[in-house]
Length: 313
Image (tube, rainbow, N blue to C red; front, side, top):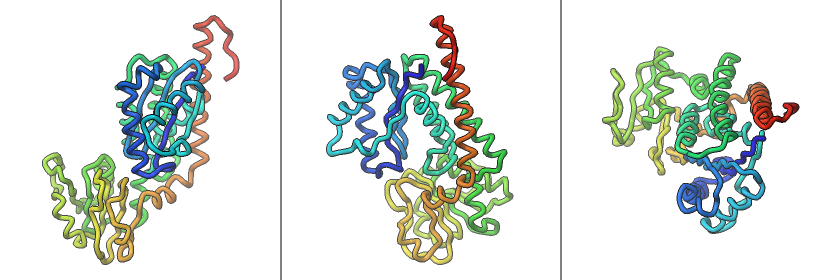
């Protein structure tokens, strides 16, 4: 049996302030909480989500105990913000997360590494938890490959089709994985007239690419295309623009929404609406085909180990 569950919150169910308070409380799982919640856990905490994966013989009791602990840590009502999945549904959700299908920026790749790190940090996990994390990492990679082959749109492909990039002055704000990936995408397309803007200038080592600190943002109007993907908690761009096209991929936002009155401004919610979303059935079908197949294999092995015949899901 897949005796696994998850209790989580993400950008779809709560704003940044609520996510931050819950993330802080969840971190205690690896400290004093271990005394009151004697179950193995994997904590996946990013800017867009906090998810607590756990294993237990009785998932409903463990789930209730987890909520009770969080009530002691967090003021106000928050339970309605959470989602929960158990057994095969928990496995499917983890695969969806790892593949980037549940991300604010659809099919982003950074989450794959974040899941891998969260899993690696956890110890004394039961076989069922090792199974879902190891297989979810493989399924996530497989889904990206298969959907790419089927032509499902990616974030970078979406950005590329929404505006003209060639012969434009381009500024990538933040030396994040997203912006590094888009920079590689631009180079592949033959576009080289872009620059990075970051507060960690010394960390950028791209031959032939200009790098500025954040002081350049006082002159943001001098660029034609701007992509913001940084971890800043405040607006980096504000004021009146001209004919720029700006993509704000950050959470929280880096661009004052008022800028959209004088420029073409796209945020991650708008981009998510225009992505995959021509291939939702294909992605779900591929996901469940793999989840069901792998779950059958796991249950068959578990039954053989217990000397029981392997039938059904």
